[in-house]
Amino acid sequence: MTSTRRLRRNPSFRNPTFFSTWLIWLVGFLAFPIAGLAGTAVGGRVSNPVAALIGGAVCGVVIGVGQVLVSRRRLDPLIWIPLTGIGMGVGLLLGSTVVNYRTTLAELALMGAITGIVLGAAQAVGLPPRTRGRWLWALGMAALWALGWTVTTLVGGNVEAQFTNFGAIGAVTVTALSGLLLHLLLPFHPASGVWLRSHPITSST
Image (tube, rainbow, N blue to C red; front, side, top):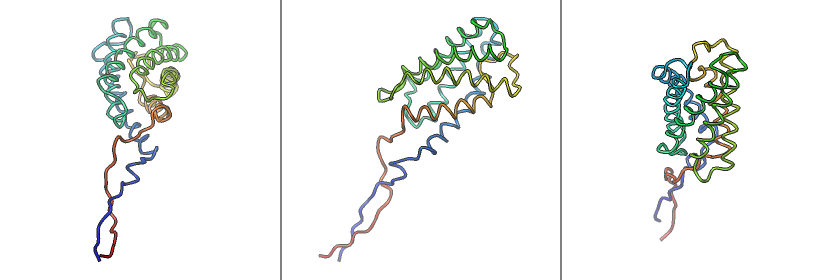
């Protein structure tokens, strides 16, 4: 009798659960408050076009870095990060100009929708070719950015400070829902597996 061992691919690696992938993406909400502070530190209050463009771009770069880190390699950093910076900068410039830098609930929601549609369009270009319905991402970001500002305002966030980005509650909301959308459009599939388990096979000689 001889005994050999057959290696089997770990099914938990080959078929990662949606929940684990979504939870990793959710951790990315931490990038939003950091991005807001960085954008405001560099560009100042969003009270003029230059501040909106520069602060928004810095904010976008930080958000892009955070999203790449929690994307499980679905997003290419060399494409996603600069496009997120450009989209956020241009989007915040347009959105804040349209509402004349005012901070009422309706105006922040409108600013968020405009920022989100420009940002989402830029990011949609950067999604991998295998993405399904990539332009749904742009529409989703328009709705989610408006929602982020709405939630932040309703919970009493200091929106009068004219930050480049919404607060932590808005960030959690946007990140959680964008994770669902990303999974729908771009499910996580490992490029390769790892042979982790082995089982003995007994044969006679």
